[in-house]
Length: 173
Image 1 (cartoon, rainbow, N blue to C red):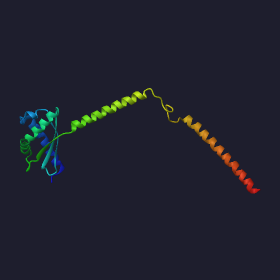
Image 2: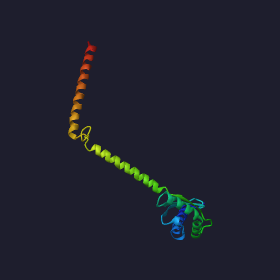
Image 3: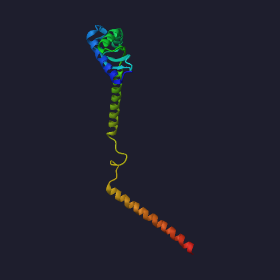
Image 4: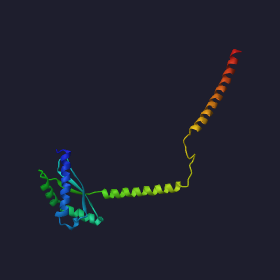
């Protein structure tokens, strides 16, 4: 079992060799300059490698590039084996990278959020606050509230004092 550092080194080497071979060594017109190798992953036992690629173009270009990569798989694996110098050359699996579609989806969501923000900004431009513009208490407001609270406490104490005096008067009589 190989360690992760070795698998990462092999994955980087495979990415470089496959990209170089696609650019200079393979004469297939389906694999022109519009194929980009984005990432490579190798299993822990170094037996299988997954090569992620993107294609600049429409769906027809993507399909033809996938067919071209499948037909060039043996040549690419031979080039990787020659460059790697390992006992066993990993089998190559080509997978179309979902990165461009994901990026497009994220861009669409960000556009929707910008449009929603613009609508909210437009609606709130003429609106007024439900309460005061500044909802926080000021120090002078706090003193008014304290005075009101003290007056209320005094009223409550006086009311309790009268009730308490009446009760005592009845008990002693």
